[in-house]
Length: 317
Image (cartoon, rainbow, N blue to C red; front, side, top):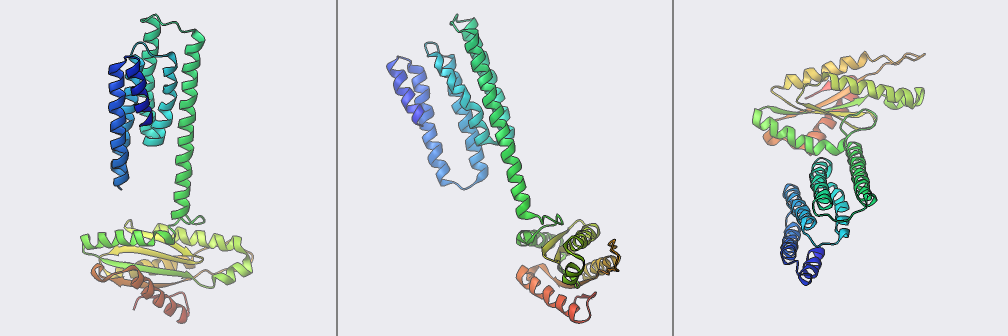
């Protein structure tokens, strides 16, 4: 905004009236975009406006490059292209935008040199060209690192580091999604709570390395046995859960029994015998009356019933 108004003023005084008018128009458009962005909360609309802005800004820049009578220092502005493109548009569209407008800028620079007989030293052209490539490379590398860092943070926030399962932070979102799917498919909602029996004793007696191995092998059983429409969580410690949509109560019950029996088959290479079992509590409800807090409470209640009945059991009533 500021640059548009300043250069419009300067160019009017240099009798570059057409360029000044274009810059003034771009400055007013920038003001409108700025205040419109402040009033909207749609990420998609902001992305669209960012694309409009960058195309307009770079087009004005190219028009200035093609206008005769400008200072050679105007080509300094080419260095802003990759920074603005990657910052506002991300790595994919940033790369495309930089490639397109760098190509146009290169054609304009060389045409000024060859066709308009403007006196550039070869070293000047080389400096501009390779400095622009450095800015592009740095911008692209920075955005790549930024994307990887964000993905890593997102995974840390969503997935359990040891088992790779969803963590507790995803419960509400996945429950809502499964609830909507159940309503569409006219299925029931099921919440299965799992707790490995005597897990603290395993850690105390055999160490946390063995304990972690047990957790990983149990999580593998869960992921290998659940249907495609089910989601598996590690809620913390030795507590796990499955959220799923099912067309009958027996689907959830049979799945829980399968996991319970498979857990007994876990083999840990250890000098002393180590038996792994799990207790399961199941809450099943129609989607119209299902809520996460209620199903969590009910499955926990039935899980503790399984514990009080001697462990290594599935309780659903």
